[in-house]
Image (cartoon, rainbow, N blue to C red; front, top):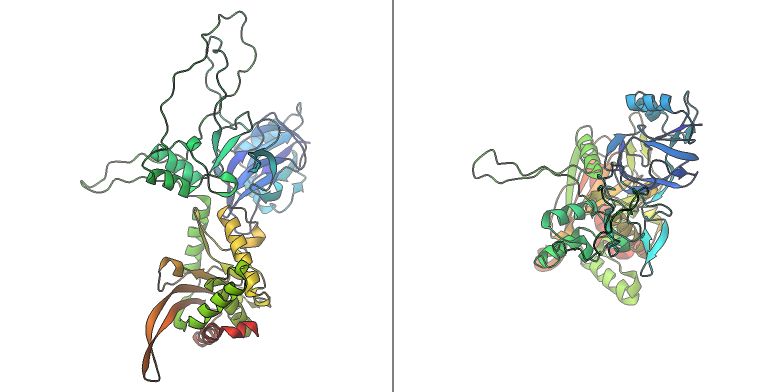
Length: 506
């Protein structure tokens, strides 16, 4: 039975998805559980597996294209099965909305066939089927190499010259899926922003060693190459050393060997002439799926959520001393001040349940545990991995989880369960020297804590002036849930705990 493959819902906040790359091409056999495609969601790149068996007969959505949930992206059927009705239905787009309404079903019976959602999703890079120098090569696919769904270039009328040396590894942009896989199975993994920067700066990606997870070339690698003064810029093409062509004896009947091509970065607008003489030139770049989601969610937060802000100062000398003592006793702990702040906030939330709550239209929802979202900056935007039940965990446990989740977030390997469902969030910009700022609430949470730098300041105590490490924090509150006095009492408790951090050990 023919099946329609539709864009799945891979995270609670996902409304559309970008097809990063196909792991199968038209005409390939597909089995249940086989990796079919990589999807860029609003938070991560996910590898999706098929829930139907047959042949990938038709692909509608190409690598780099973004479509809404429920949109038909491919058809799987038997080799000789008539799919004309499904082709007409898919090309008209008539079924996209009905698919979206039933997106939670994995397999649904339909008039012309079943609708199959890409399912059994695992984070990008979780599969490993090839190695390079003993290191796993994340995201590779066994079998035939993935090909870009575009027509091949015209073939020459005369047979090609003798086989030249094996071409170098081909960069593959892991975020947009453009470019072809080399037949040797060896490839470079490049983030979209790194590919774009390299193209603009003329950097030869093949000369770089990636410092990202699994050897991925990321933004900082390109910046380092640029800072090196262009030492790794692309070299001019060398003349071929292949032997002279041999005269043709028979017409060519076999497809010539596939030659890898360098990945094409996302298209950008050519720099137009400024509208005003003397004004700066500019360029327009497509908005990433993650950045679009950030813009949409924060805009929706500022509108319907009535924010108000409370700021206080906290003396961090004792907290800093406790941190030093713990790290000296056990170097493996690597506790940071932020870990202490997370633990203190979690304890305070349990004592002030109104702050550990959310507005649910006709009810208020109170949470039994403190699940703390910790803002992490990544190349593509911002994500908040969640420390579950932080009130029940030690500072050491919190520190380990924060480091592990932050690393997975930067590698875009978080699962939806790891970055959704927080009851309270913390955003810390103190490491950048920011003294004070306000943050936007992440609905449906009722509050978010913005943490500034801890800096030495003069403080008057009993008529005496002394220097203390002062940290300013600002809490953004949803006034539908948290009143001014409620928020102030929460901050008082947080201040008391951090100024007397041995309370965390009680």
